[in-house]
Image (cartoon, rainbow, N blue to C red; front, side, top):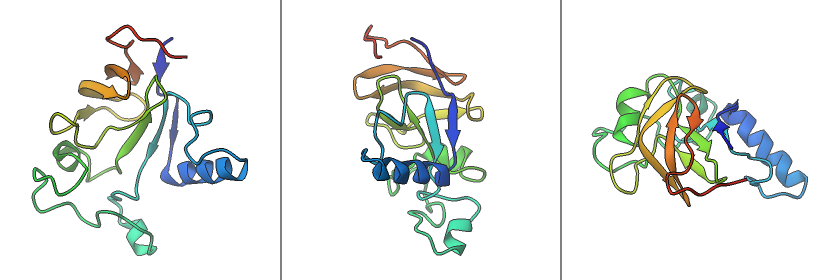
Length: 151
């Protein structure tokens, strides 16, 4: 089964969907509702417009770190260098149903280089999210490199 990023939500839409899930008796980020191929912006981590700060809403980082290569933020140096000026961080649901923050540090390096715009983004190197190991290229996840299937 091919998984493409098909749904892109703003941070407000993501929050509203989570609130609706709870009101309907689901978990806030329930896998039955947040399906593979769903993506959303996370302005509560960083909002390049500054609007959340002006509204008095929580923002983890009100400004980029002094040294983006120091691990003072969970957001990667790639994000701070390439994307912080024009978009909030992004989260994507992988083929196995696990969320993946594409702009975070990875467990084995500085994170991912992200090119393109949602929904047609490409990330490198490969992704390991739970039991999914593959790539996201032009908005489409590759099949699992270990041969696992989801569905």
